[in-house]
Each structure stands twice: as structure tokens, then as C-alpha cells.
Length: 105
Image 1: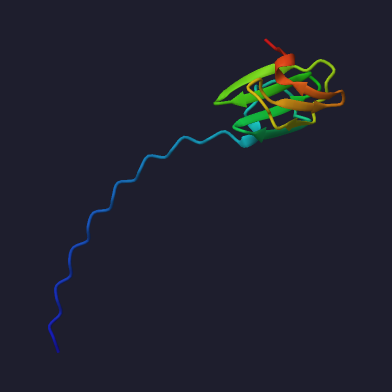
Image 2: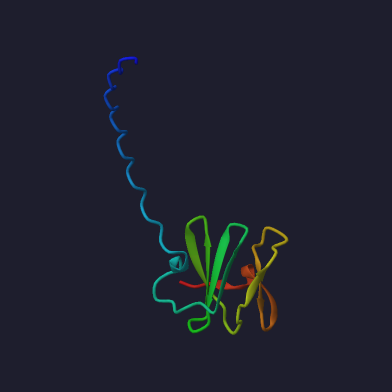
């Protein structure tokens, strides 16, 4: 029988990496004060949420959120954007170009 080799000492543990900050829940990206959205979605790096009570459409791109006044449009979805003018949304009145809506202050 062969003699036992001495045990090697344990190697020190790697230090823990700092925790990354928590990301906000996916549903809370729009500004406070808006009710629950009637419709929302995402396409081509953009998120949108429509708030009929406030007649607002919130658009988030690259971490910035802009609100638009939708007037009497009830936004129900977004269509493929064909150019640089921005996305086209569906409403009860037909297609609505984002460029045709006024920014809300």
C-alpha cells in the first residue's frame, strides 16, 4: 500500500462580483400618473403604450419616453414602419402616422 500524499491547502475563493442594479419591471416604463394602458407592444427597438383615459400614447426608444396626444384616436396596435417618419399605428379611424400626432408636454 502506497503512503497517502498530504492534502493540498484550499485555494482562496474569488471575491464576489458586485450586484447589478435591478431593472424596473417591464410594465412600468411609462411616466407616472398614466392609468393602465389599453394596448401596448414593442417593435424595432421601440415600445408603445396607449392610455385612452388621458388620450396619450407613450413611446419609448433608447431609454427616452415621449408622450403624444392621440385626440379621438383609440390606438390598438402598431404596423411595420416603411420609412424614417416613424411607426404607423392602428386606430378606429384607420392608420395613424406618429408624425401626425402632437407631442404632449
